[in-house]
Length: 271
Image (tube, rainbow, N blue to C red; front, side, top):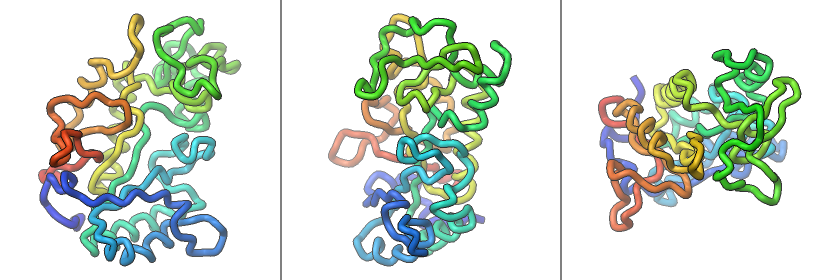
């Protein structure tokens, strides 16, 4: 049985959230990189500040070309930060102090080093493996979508010589976008969310949500399909967050702000 700080499903509405980049917080082994054991050592300090929730930026295995937002393995810990055992100890100690824990999951894209993409680029066109990502024979599709990082990218398409096709990326070219028109992708992402929530994490921040779908004649942002897929998530998760996100009416606002709360929170039925 997972012991949580509270069974109150709306704990996040008035939480005092402390955002932490693990690698920049506390180094426990003098290697110059912050780690989970170091963060665990300083939980009393965070508690003394009046914090009620700790939000961890991505700490998963990654090439770190985008500070951890280029995830190569959703179910593990970057070795520089520790191990899953270290994470479970951190979670246990945080809960013992009645601190909630929010982790962040990037659901729009992966690293190009993720096994899903490496498998996709080697798979035949039209195969289930290839269809985990968005491919095209031409870079002219979805011309209405802006290039977000104009200082680094000239197109939302990048050529993959092994696949012999272009792949779609709203962020950097080393971060191919997942294909949410493939039901297997949504199922896989839900499984990842369940992996961390079942471990005892109290909430998730889902990053880059506005860009999940692509449609011709649109700017490929905040499309109705995106709202629909979030509504189809089990009722045990609430709302996704990211910048540039028009909030659906089903999200509860932060008291006094009119803005929905940040994390996805588990409902009491799963606590």
